[in-house]
Image (cartoon, rainbow, N blue to C red; front, side):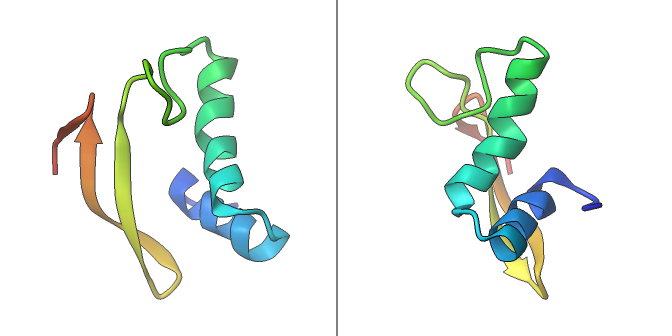
Amino acid sequence: MPSTPKRAAFLLRDTVGWALLKAVNTITRNPARAIGLNDRGGLCPGLRADLIRVRLSSDMPIVRSAWHKGERAF
């Protein structure tokens, strides 16, 4: 079991062969919809824009920057 959702996305890509976009949607959009958070979970016009930029280091995604509600936070 991956320790973080961001790691899960890369595992789905690397072990199952999914495109990274499909893997990220699986770990963001599906959980948000499951609990009724319809204003987030994907990068689409009108949705809340919370996202992170990562870089892989020894196969672990390290957060390099983050945005909250479309504004850079880190």
